[in-house]
Each structure stands twice: as structure tokens, then as C-alpha cells.
Length: 511
Image (cartoon, rainbow, N blue to C red; front, side, top):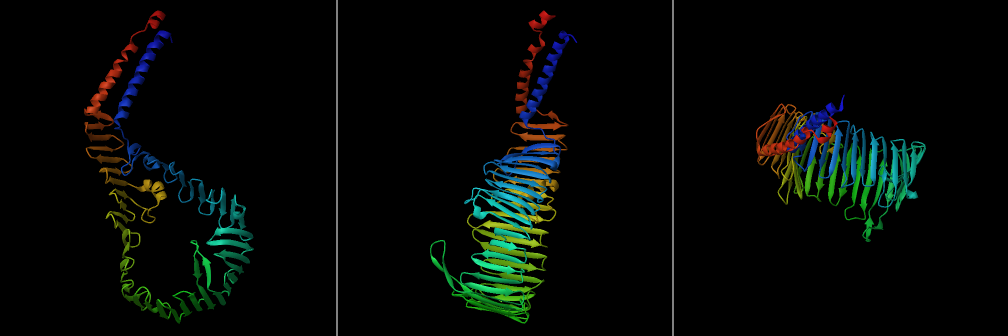
């Protein structure tokens, strides 16, 4: 093809590209383009930020208050907050997760395989590897904090399983545990053990017999004061048939407990007496410390309590009504209906439940400000939440939220999949948004303006200070003020293209 033909074609191609660019520029500046369910980008209602959703629930990207969330529900999500130096990654939650906060991190797979570590207050490095319940390994910059355990062969652990130290060889043949200075040597666990510590000695041949005694001792607390550590003596025979205990020795409220099950059980102390016959059915409790008296005939079916500290009447499962200075509870046809009211400043909390998780209504009131927040769940239909600022959020359907409330990973990974309807209201800014079928229909309103989009963006409408704008099948209608200004700017740009149509001197010379 000759050069004289190529040059005009280049000019017309340039004009076409510039025209298209300007059209999309106007559209981008207008911010009036949605194709919900396929692609949608919008501002968040309840917090500052933006969210982009692609192919309905299959992908979203959200930025809010310095944090970024990317997710492919329910397969993967990543939440990152640079301000807090934290990262949370979920892979088919809760199958595999990775969390990092500052220098601390933890990775787990089914809670069976986990790797964690990072810097602590006393160690530069601490790394843990666990293949539960077989292998436990820790490496630290402090040699005294390093350990390895391979169950059942041999091992040494620190600060695991609610024990300060554990050592075992051919478990259960031998295992030694240490907790708060008390050392227990187990042989053929849990059959036989010897126990010793400060003022303490004991033994057990389970379940035949056991005896343990601790003397009254003293210790220095963290404030540097000397305090008394109570003593006790405990004896068991054919546990749990016979047991006799003296606890709290050296205190103002020592107690004595004895049982021969199922014949009787009793508890005696300065503050509380209890006598049970044909355990656990028939009991009488005189709680002088809390100020009430209770009869259980038989427990747990019938109970009556009277006194300043507690008033209760129960005929289970028909009804149960009780009250203490801080708690009120009512149950009818358990588990059909249950109500609890807890008064614990600064929060006053009420909860109503029907059939466990089928329906739940939790209301909390701040006693100083008078503000309330509330959460209602009707499984599996909806979850509705209102916070102290009056922000409201409604979700339909709600399959997992009523079962595991206040779980961020559920909200990130699973809620977008089955949330057919989402409605949010910002009580401070008076903004509202509604979404049906992953933005197939979406409406946003705020003082003085509104925006609606539906059917993949085939219908779009916006009303605001600049007038009303409408798009049908992506074709704009209406003459809002902003549109006139933008078209004037577009025409000004278009007139500048005339120079491209005029032949330049170079082209004339070449022709």
C-alpha cells in the first residue's frame, strides 16, 4: 500500500481513538455506569471506602479505612491492614488459614498441622511446628524455651495443654507434668500418680484410692506483699463413689465436702450449706453468702429458690423463672422460648432465643449514653444488625451467621455467596443502599440524590442537584447540567481535531 493512502488512514484512525477516548472519559467522569451481577463498583454505605464486585459473588475487592480485602468466595480471601501491620488469609475457611500481626504469625491446616512464631516480649525468635497429636516442636532464641516431642515415644513441652511443663517417655508408661510449682509423676497414665510441691504431697491409684494433702503456706504476690496460700486435704475411694475433702484451710471460709454416691452428698462452710440425697436429685441449699435458700425436688426438673440473692421457680421443661441482683431469666417449654437479661455496667444485655439458633434477638444498651445496638437472626432467612450509631444492615439469606455470630471470616468468605438481598443504612450520613441478587438490582440514596441500576445495567437512573439522568440499554437520556458542561468540553476537544484533517506541507511535498 502506498504512503499517500496510509497517511490519511492513520489520521482517521487517530480521530476514532480520540473520539472513543473522550466518550469513555465523559462516562468515567459521570460515574454513571453499572452492569450489576457482571461488574459493579460502588462506595460503601456504612464506612468510608469502595467495593468492586465481578460476576456476582465470585470475586470482590474492597478498600475501607486503610484496609484492603480481596476474595474469591468461598475459596479464598485476603484481608490486609497496613496501619495495623496485619494480614488474614483464608483458604476454604476454616480448612486452612494464615494470620500475621506485626512479627507474630500462624498458619494452620484443619487445626492438625500448624506453624506459628515470631518475636515475643522476651525472645527475638520463637517458631512452633505442630502435627497434632504426634509431633510438637519449638525453636527459640532462648535455648531454655526450645523443645521437641514425638508422641508416644519421647518428648518435652513447655506451656502446652494448660501445663507449665510436660515430659514423657513411652507415653502412657511415664509422664511428668508441672503446673504452678506442683509436680505430678504419672505411671501408666491415668492409673497411678505421685504428686509433690510446696507443702504438698499426694498419690492416686485410679479409681481405687487417692489421697492428697497441702499445708497452709505463704508466698509473695506481684505487688511484693506476703499472702496466705490455703491448704486442703482430699481422700477418694472407688472414685466417684466416695470422696471426702477439706478445702480452704487457713481462710475465713473453710469448707467440708463428702459424698457416697448415689446415696448422699453434703457441703458445709461458713457461707454455704448443701445436702443432697439420692444424688443428684433431691437437694437443699442454704447459701448465706448470697442470701437465698433453694430446694431441688428432683433436680433438674423441679427447683424453688427464695431470698434476696436469688428467686427462682422451675418445673422443667414447662417453665423456669429466675432472678438475681444482676440476672433475670425466663424459659417456657424449653427449648422453645428462653429470655435472659444481664445487668453489668456499662452494658445492659437482653437476649431472646427460640429453639436455640432458630431465632435470636440480642439487645445491648450502654447505661451511660443510653445508646443501643441490636442483632436479630432468623435462621436461615435473615440477619439484621443495628450498631450504637444507628447504622443498620439486613442480609437475606443468612445460613451460617446465626450459628457463628460475629465471625469476620464467615462474613468475608461465605456471606457473599448466599446473600440474596443486602440492605444498609448509615444513621450518621443518612445514606442507604439496597442490593438484590448480587447487584442485579441496586439502589443507593443519600440526602438530595439517588441512583438505581438493574438488569445488568440495561436500566440506570440517577437524580441529583444537576438534574435527572437516565440510561436505557446503555444509551444516555436527559440533559443534566453536568452533561451540558461535559458535552461543551467534548465539542471543544473535537474542534481541535480539524487540524488533523488538513493536509500538512510534508504530505503535499511527498504527493
